[in-house]
Length: 222
Image 1 (cartoon, rainbow, N blue to C red):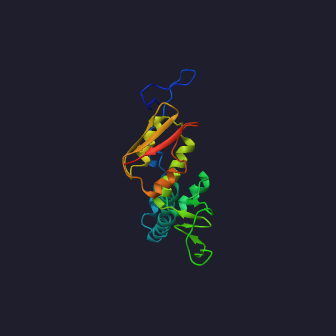
Image 2: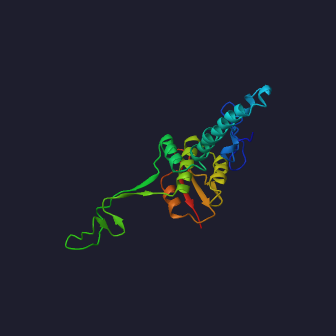
Image 3: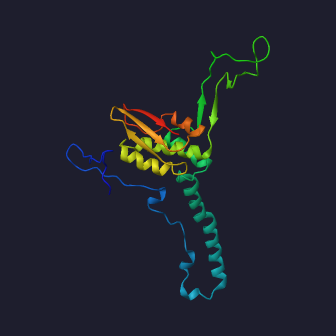
């Protein structure tokens, strides 16, 4: 099991001198897999091998289990349990578990100057490139998956640079590479080697990138 070290390679230990170790997860499939298959035909005794009617009944039950039991649980893992592949419903479930919304609220800006029609500049309650009353932005599914993974890691992370860099390699693989730099002055900087799209910029502005308590965090990209 790999030892946890600082960015300079110094081994981190507890106050009593015990080494700190960490599993290196690469995918959600590193956990033990569950086998949902059921072989009902194995319940047939040898003396019923020539009983076609009984075999047909059990085969029908086997087909039912394959469609409505095994397939159901496999779909549940793909669409709900696995945050890398969860669909819209699964992300709503994780949103409740992690207590993190799947949308971003825009606060109203009543003091901004708006243009519109008439003496009161009325424009169907909307202002110049914004809503007078505020609103919400629904993010794409892929972005919500990333956002919830960041939230999960934020709650579970110890905040060390090596651990965070391993997580960055895993979670940002579809977008590109990146790494975290400890600036040594209670600040840290995330360096991403790809252009950050607008939706990821919204996510980063929610302070979801892991950071130790009291450490100021920023990010850069090309």
